[in-house]
Length: 113
Length: 113
Image (cartoon, rainbow over all chains, first blue to last red; front, side, top):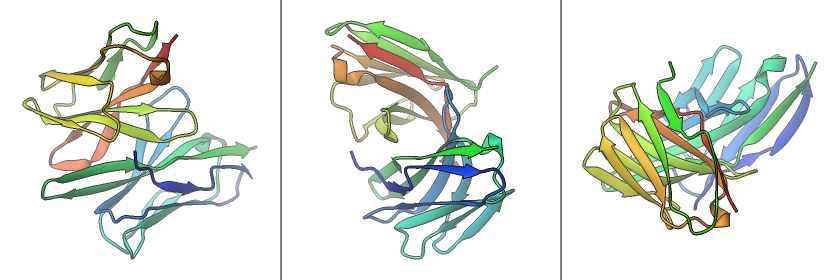
């Protein structure tokens, strides 16, 4: 099935550093979302973006909906150990007779204290 | 108590066996979904249901079937399990008014020998 391309696939960072990850698609979406998955659990929504160009923050997290509607990025500022996990982007497309909810391949984040 | 529960949490079965994974939710949402997650990959949509009488195939429905027994219950069946169906399976729900956010269960880890 179709999946979104996320990069990087994994990253090791020092506590306190900022983190950037992005997600790209060959097709457009109406909504972009970012989820975090902790070990042994299901993904939990972090941020949802509804309009092209939209920039939204949730605490130390900031995400943007790309102008072309084919990409999105997520920034985490001043990382802390509990930020460790897998981050997934997801794109939703709803329209007449169409429904897609596609997840990215994930970015595995490890924070070194 | 968890809003979205899945049973069993772990299951080992043999090739050719029929198995059912169950999902229940207390969130009152009308939409429910089944995903599978493979190592290094994101989540892939198997089936989704927008209400009790609505069932739709997702990206990777071959080899699976579903039943929406009630608004709160959505089960996934593997009629004749095969080893490449070994994966982590997640159920999710969403509200039709804000369908973008999906709430995930804890997952069922399935091993097909």
